[in-house]
Image (cartoon, rainbow, N blue to C red; front, side, top):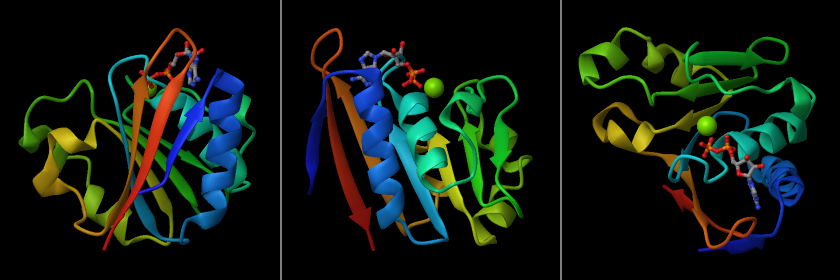
Length: 141
Ligand code: ADP
Ligand code: MG
């Protein structure tokens, strides 16, 4: 499984831009890591790498839950941090979003494994210092 290290926020954004090129047009991407690990930062790079928006335009969907970027909703960015129950998540209509020809980035999706597509990319981010991050990319099916 490919493992990367970055030493700055900017480097994580650049890595996200590179990883974006390897993603199929339709893919669920779980961004996994503690608060402050860099999940939203990685999303900025992926959204920009897919040409859907400038990275500066990407903000955390912690309160809004779902952000959409690009024409025809080519990238969705979802944050499930504030939801506790699978029933609450079910009201978001994620299945319908997963069916679209779109890259769907999800923070905290691993808390609701039964609601995530079996076939997905998992990007795990771990802080190993103030600015250092270890980033593992795993393709599942
Ligand atoms: P999360 O979405 O996982 O809670 P954010 O992406 O919102 O995390 O925040 C990550 C924080 O860590 C930012 O303040 C960012 O500047 C900082 N940071 C420091 N080094 C890095 C790095 N190498 N990669 C990503 N973020 C970093
Ligand atoms: Mg975040």
